[in-house]
Image 1 (spheres, rainbow over the protein chains, first blue to last red):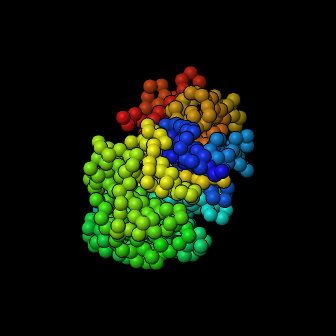
Image 2 (cartoon, each protein chain N blue to C red; image 1 turned 135 degrees about the vertical axis):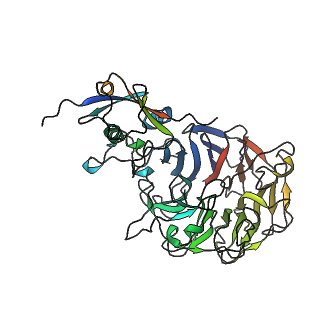
Image 3 (cartoon, one colour; image 1 turned 180 degrees about the vertical axis):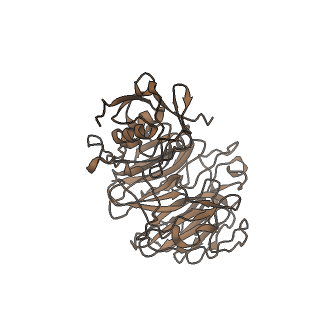
Length: 395
Length: 105
């Protein structure tokens, strides 16, 4: 029988929730890295016991952690226990935490500026890793989306990181600006049908795609309309909150923008709005059913000024038609006096039949539906604010 | 020139960094030459590489903004990292304190 392992990053540590395929009884481990912000954890599909975690702090900076036993024990990849703490020549290790923008003449791009909140130009400055995306084909390769926005790659299991500088050097950087959470690269999707193709999204720059493994990047924001920027249909500057793909149909993308739910049927070349009958089309998360590529999920949030669910009701909205026609899913979710948010990386789907849907809230609840959204139950109720949720389906 | 015996410098870390370094409240770091903030942090990072980047930037070596350095009841945070530390720190009578700013709530 299959099992599931849910990886939960919170404001004050990481938690791992485990269950069998029924997804009714849960074991909870944690907090791991207690007291630290865990922006994201994700397991490798090549080696499910390998999990990467982004541990971060405004005080102490960025730490990368890795587990090779499904989250029971953790190491910093550059400093495994029992090994010498210095490398050849006496140089200290610790490279696994080092994210330095590549400005070299050979592979880099000059360190430019981006727009700050007040419209002035501001230097690029690394702050943290928002998202870790393990390669679909190599367990030692993993990508990192960071703030200030850039993409890094490690080919040695997270021991060292190199920037794919073509994105930051795209040339539109001075027009990028931070969203409320900072100028972060938060979404990173690898195309399972084309190893050269990667999608990313940045708040607030928009979505980009590479078709050459990260050397060059193209903005893919045609069709987006954002009233909060001087030119609402600009090539860049849109506050894309999240993008989701069903790997079986990789040219179809779904997007939760700051406002508006969008879809693209041509790998991001063109977008059209599919907000339809949603009570509000502001939100952060969006995800796609594992087996039904036209079934998608969002959690509408009241507005950009009021980051909590609409009407005090926690409702997941599901569309079986790839958007436009939405139904509220409420069974098992609080329907009064609820004022939580669901952040952009805090929804995930497993690949069991029936498909399991998971999401975490800023109120510290993690909910699971083991029947594709028809019914919900809390797995845990009182964690710190949830920053991210990922799920692994284990055979 | 003959160098004297290495100074044994006492360093107190903030709690989160103790966890990260798998160390106790106070560490002792041996410094063979001049004892400065820079030489102490160089030696600290050599012994505890997991702390690299957590106290000062990986590349610029600028102090992280929410961390402060204190010794002998003096704030050394804004001193040059190459200024010799007080004799009481060099002799081991007083520790070098690395503190996280009190911010949050």
